[in-house]
Image 1 (spheres, each protein chain N blue to C red):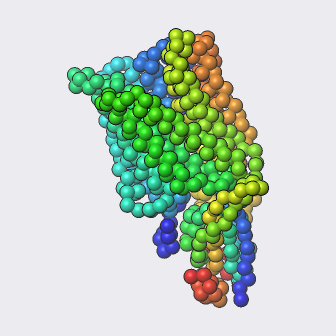
Image 2: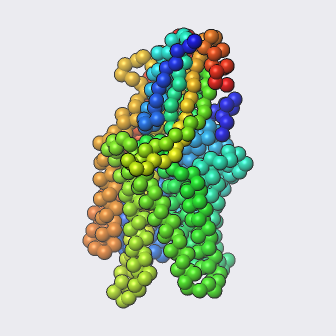
Image 3: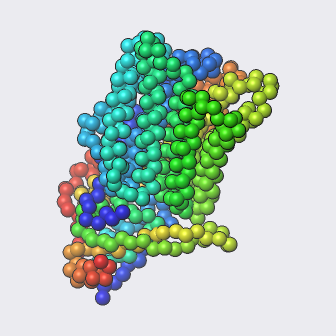
Length: 452
Length: 99
């Protein structure tokens, strides 16, 4: 890409991504409160209202919320252009996702149609606006850039996931429509958790990991091929299950095997790159990525155990393992990677914004103590370590609580602590930013001149 | 002939490369330019240079990275020449030499 002569826009106004980052942990707090309120009842069936509400508080309220914010931050740094959309446009996306998720959870819990309709309206508005702006950016330009290629695939995957979700929501809101939705639930979950989450982790980690951990660069060709394979496999699995196309069983097995290989390749590939970094400086955020990938590997391994040996003894635990897989994919794979990513990208965003501001007020640069924080002053190693311990303990406790229901309150409590800590760390970062921004603005504004 | 200041930030984690080169720019005297080696094309830095009276030329360099005693992988790194547009003799030299 030739950026010469173009005006670059690499640093988004801080409130755009931060608005999403600061809202997301509140949904985590709500989700943890749900666990404390409902207890082990939640692990009774995946169709229970509380369980559905919990799942969507995490997947939409926490995961999608952070991911949208991260894309608003990352795309400009990578390609030098903002995602199109003015303040009101982005505000509508944020508000729509926030209210839509709250209405959806309320709908699941109260069974009142009006909340399903409200959720349908707000979520479809929010996701359509986001998809439109991102598609308009990546549809024609920036050939060859991995991040753009990945975002094209991701846009498609997000649209499929949300479309299936909205269709099921319509069936809830308007039962007379006769939409048979249950057969789409697994496909919706597959596109959301394997498609959107895994592909987004590939896209984000291919940028974040070499940048913050100084590993060798990801191979663009390998990642492009892998992403296309994953997408293709998801399409084939969906079509065979929707239309019950009469494929021989061995072909279906082959497709599941292909998906497993693709996911294992992706996990091993990232773990190897992290291992190959030259300066092995201890960094807790790497542990979040490791936890995320090991969670996925555990799911693949145990899924095959159940799949290959469906005897009475294993089937006895099948319902519990459905939940174990759900917990590991949502809270293990996705939430771990997201919390790990936040430990880096929030300080980076604050650093870039303060640095940029201090260039415009150059006298502030000689002020002591420095007004532009380094990243570790914004979220310290110690704070990340506490976060990692809380997250890992809550993940394990959640999994154990599926088998030993008396642990569920403890699991909910640790999950609450995990999100309380995340909320504290993120809001404190924002407070530090605001404090030092105010201090920098006290100095006169002028054009930078290094004395030449 | 202008004096070259070499800075290799290719093994630094973000945002240290940015910090290091800004530090060096603040010390750069008349008659000097910077050759920066980096593993990425640093767009936020290029934006800063555009907006603050500097010019640059960014290009890629192919090289091999040793990952163990036996093997290495091909890698692309970036070489970015940075100079002040206000330093007329350096500006003229760099425009001829690098563009």
